[in-house]
Image (cartoon, rainbow, N blue to C red; front, side, top):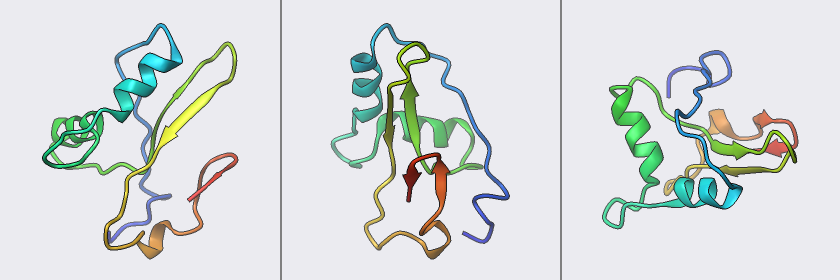
Length: 93
């Protein structure tokens, strides 16, 4: 990676809002069948011209507090820089 993900982290907000948590989950979990990657994350990485990678993506219902988070998979194992990081309260990578 070359950089500390904590020092260089940036938060992005999706432009789309959803009527239900189920709709948001479905959007986040849609995968490209060939690449086996989450479509929304692939689009994000391409849209930012590969300047950013992603550590997690999620939905939060501001009324109920319900949250749903997806993280990338690491076929060669999670990088050492990411092991043990707490990116969201209560969520440890």
